[in-house]
Image (cartoon, rainbow, N blue to C red):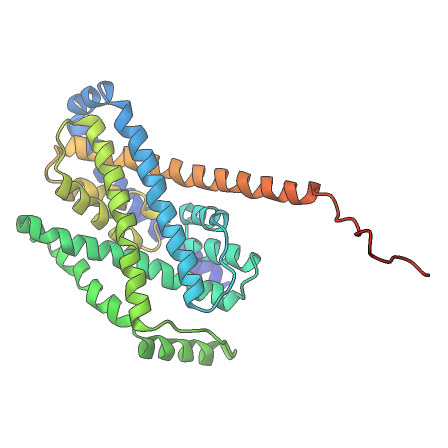
Length: 320
């Protein structure tokens, strides 16, 4: 009963926060509706298509990094991308924990133990968003005027704290505490600090691709969006959306942060870009899950239809 109440409270908080963010974006859209309508009527389809491809490449890169995280924690078998993309759909379910549950349970079905599956997913998600924070930090010097926000400075404090939390000494203490609370002995391989920090760096190309996808979406509505500012606003909005745990997929929050941070765009165009980018990435997740499921299904059918190997002429069968 307590778990149900906690889940219900988390969902209610998420809906409230997401609703406030969505209301902020809607207000920006309605205030400049004439400019928004003109931009949508003259939108260029080619950048949107290119943005879809960049987004798919970026999310695939994160999936490959997750497979690498599985190897770092001692799992010899690396789940297929099907497990990643299908598990990703859990982030759209209210409650906040479903991105971890979805991906981890897919890994468990692929042959991993539950402890290793969940630890690899937590490690991967932490490295994913620390990689985004690293991109935000690298983009700040390009325009210091955009770093004045207290929210930005608060988020950036998570980068050194997060990197420190990946140190094996801290990780081992956390695992020991988890074993003590759960009263279960769990054997998990802890990566070295160098391996964990390299996992964070491995996500940087993916975030550049995700930011490029968002810039291409903005390019569909306006001829000259500022590249550095859109990259900055994109990575920052994803990080804040992730931190706001109860909100499914950061819906509403991510769009509100992007609209605020994308100062090079008119508010209406920034809001239009944020909403359209959300739709693009929902399509990316759906395509990734659908295509990878089709590939896995085709491979399964091929194996099922493969003829049984026939005994060679030199083999002996039956009784002599």
